[in-house]
Length: 145
Image 1 (spheres, one colour):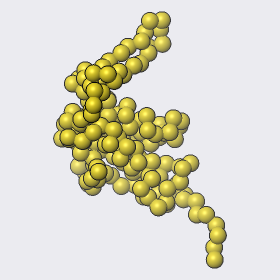
Image 2 (cartoon, rainbow, N blue to C red):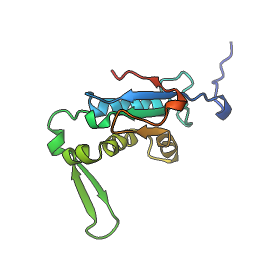
Image 3 (cartoon, rainbow, N blue to C red):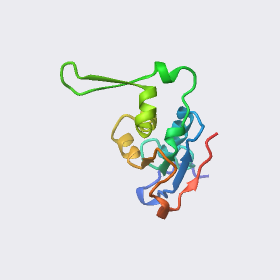
Image 4 (cartoon, rainbow, N blue to C red):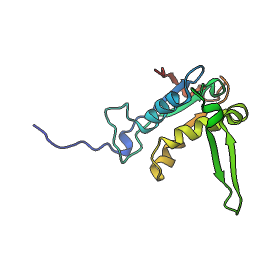
């Protein structure tokens, strides 16, 4: 019996393309599914220290739902680096103006906060509407539970 752990090599990684439809689904539920696919946790070859994940396309972000009172209470903050440079945007304004950025921030926050996470987020494409430009990659539809 072989008791060695198989470590996946870079040339053994097979990447697929998946499409997630965020219409009428909670933003966080879609984000967790996307993060799981980007990390590769759905694969038997998952390795925590390597990027074995797939490419993910998220469509219909403008139709994603924020449950509870998040539209009024949730605030997105970023800082310019200058004194007094804190910018705040409510979730309601973010979902009306830049819904794809709200989805991107949710997914990015669920990935590792290091160079591996930055490599994973490069395989993510987010679109506000139902149109996307990755038809040539023949993405498979992944059902969000």
